[in-house]
Image (cartoon, rainbow, N blue to C red; front, side, top):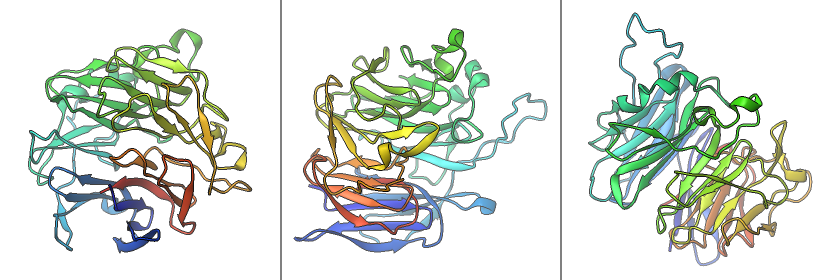
Amino acid sequence: MSDRAYIGTRKGLFEIYRTHEAWHIDQQHFLGDPVSMVLSDRRDGTLYAALNLGHFGAKLHRRDAGSDSWVEVAAPAFPTKPADSADPVEWTVKQIWSLAAGGPDQPGVLWAGTLPGGLFRSNDRGASWKLVDGLWNVPERAQWMGGGYDVPGIHSICVDPRDSRALLVGVSCGGAWQTTDGGESWSLRAKGMVANYMPPDMADVQQIQDPHRIVRCPGEPDKLWCQHHNGIWRSVDNGANWTEVHSAPLSNFGFVTAVHPTDGETAWFVPAEADSKRIAAHAALAVTRTTDGGKTFTAWRGGLPQQHCYDLVYRHGLAVSDCGQILLMGSTTGGAWLSEDGGGQWQTISTTLPPIYSVSFA
């Protein structure tokens, strides 16, 4: 059972741990610096922290298992843009938006998704990175566009536990893409999603969909969940087809989803009021859970603020532990809460942290 977790914020990285009584903030790292993403690599215990230092660019740091020291490693970087390129996108990494470990048979392999929408691979624990040209060069990338940011970005990287060469990535706004050969070739995997922000004749175009977050169930890898800009979708065939879930309570708008590690029918969401009103639904924070593949939901509120609550939970602001019972959630208003009963009751870790970008368990 997890007893340590990490919270990446606009002003540093915070570690929390569990005592016999409760969970507490333990250590702080990179105080004052924006930590956009944290990855705890369970293959070897390494911790990675991505920093977004503005004028100084995106940086990546690594802490080996058993060490108290951080080492700066290489950050993903685009090659030089050809002088004759008609691509309007600036080939400069603005932010490391996602990090994922390769499969257990790929020691040292890491994946990184960036703003703008580049996917990068490292074979040496972050010492060097290479742009995945196969995805960067798909013709459909010309139709990708920014959603919450001015440029499209890759926020979700779902490695298939059955085959480390197979992964699915989510792009805002660029749909979902799958490779089965380690990134050499790619195919669209957003069939069934609907973009209501587009003209009706373009609403089902796969390469302009805005999946806010996509997660895969490790124990049932064909089952994926997506919190989309226009609702909640799920797939039971490894992303080949997506079906909208119509029974979500409170609101179908939000940014984050988490899936149970062994039960692909169980998933959690944090509803927001609406695209045009990005606050907790009805100004009261709730976590909704389905245990039957989206047929029904329960809204859990115990221990969460229920009055004058304007918190929003970003794409990486909700995590579930390996046991499937412990959940950690962090908001843009600096609130952090933890549940040890699958989301039914929540304890407050802090209400005064900086805006939270990502949370994860060790």
